[in-house]
Length: 120
Image (cartoon, rainbow, N blue to C red; front, side):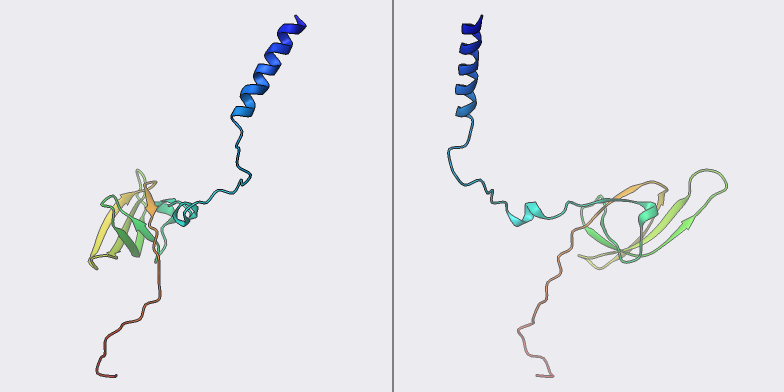
């Protein structure tokens, strides 16, 4: 019985060492895009003015204003006025209480224009 145990242990040790890394470096390089936070789902009760979210059409929108209408029966409804950040148009939609939205990832970069205007 002990010889069987010895054979099993040596086999187990031999196979476990074959799965270990042979390199001495253990650091993993990850692209910057993988280290950023993932988009967060927000509820209609979490909507605030200025919040940027992504609607199902895949484009980013900024919340301009919102109002909550509580009804005598049924769930409350939230009317939200959005501005499309790519096209510039505004839309107004009504959602039931509890619907979720995904926050949009917006990168803001300082920029400098390279053309001359009338001021020089």
